[in-house]
Structure formats: structure tokens, C-alpha cells
Amino acid sequence: MNKPTAQSHTIAVSRTARYVTLGELTENTRKVWFVLHGYGQLAEYFIRKFEKIHDEHTLIVAPEALSRFYSRGDFGRVGASWMTKEERQSEIDDYVAYLDTVREAVLGKIAPEKIQITVVGFSQGTATASRWVNAGHFTCHRLILWGGYFANGLLDLISSDRLPANNTHFVYGTEDEFLIQLNVEEYIDKLQAEIPDLKIMGYAGGHTIDADVLKEHFGS
Image 1 (cartoon, rainbow, N blue to C red):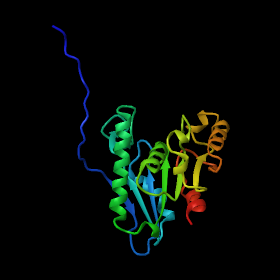
Image 2: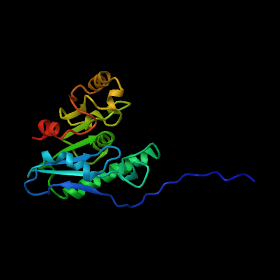
Image 3: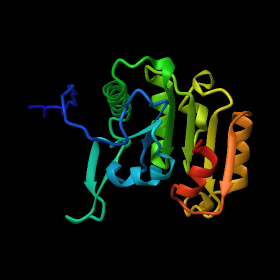
Image 4: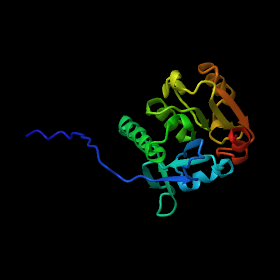
């Protein structure tokens, strides 16, 4: 008798997700930032990096990735991840739909022309941000990709016509412990050649969002 062959199946399920906000949506709100954390981080801590840019006209929203885990292999610190290589396309589709749902929940029925949307992705979140801007049902006015590595190029994740014209930024720390394992100059040159109007900025720092750099260059 032949042994049965295992078959893989997928189903869609409903689940509870978390996002954290800094500020409130009011009649004075003119700018909304959606900030996507890196691998192993949580939204409630990541959003603190953006406290210096918050004002009465700005709402900051930090969605948390759907997959949590114990980041040190025990029952201590918890982190979250946007995806793995398993069921890759399903995970991408899920987080794009999830992020669209967060945006709709936050903005409600407010007229989109009244709000400027900035999307920030850090580390693993740069790929997530790029794919969301590419496939999401909204207009991104400014895209800030911070400390990300795009193995197959940025246009592998997002179409050029979905990039905010003259307002797409790549920011990196010159002492980033992950990027310095590469030929950083060659990597930056490739990004610039791929997207000529990409605004690239390096600063003295490591693999983290520097709140002072953020405030100085993007806080207005």
C-alpha cells in the first residue's frame, strides 16, 4: 500500500493586531506618519524614536508586525517580525492588507487631500514599507527608508511610478554594523543608479533611527 502524500493547504483567518499612536487625529492634523519597525522590535518602543517630530499637526502611527517571538530564545524579551521565507507571498499579502486596514482605521473618512502621509521603514521594515506603498490603496507623499538592504534592488519591491517623486529617501548610519559588512559605497552607488532621484543621506551612527537626525532633516 502506498503511503499518503502530505499536502499543504492555506485558509484565511481573522486575528487581532496591535498598533500604537502618538498624538490624535484632530481638525488640526495635517501630517500622518506610518512608521514600520525593524526585525525583533515592538511598536510601543519603536515609536519613541519619533517623539521629537510630534506636534499638534502631526499624528504618528506605529503598526506592529503580526508575528511575535521570544527574541532571546527564552521567555524574556519579545520581538516581532514582518515575514519569513515560509509562505512568503501570503505573508506579504497579509501585511499589506493589514497595513491598509490600520490606515483606514486611523484616518477614517477624513478627506485625503487634507493629510500628507509619510511612510517610514527601518531595517526589515524598509521592505515592508516599500511593498505597502507599492500595493496599498493610498497615496504616499514621502517615503523614508532607513538602514535597509535590498538584495535585488529597491525596484524589486516597488514600481518606480509608485515612489513619491523627488521625495523618496534612503538614510543610513556610516557605522551601521550590518551595512558595513557590505561594500557600502558600491551599494549606495547601485541604489542611486537604479533610482536617480533617490535622496541618499549618510550620518555618523549605527543601525538605529537617530532621533536628532530625524528631527533635523524630516521634522518640518
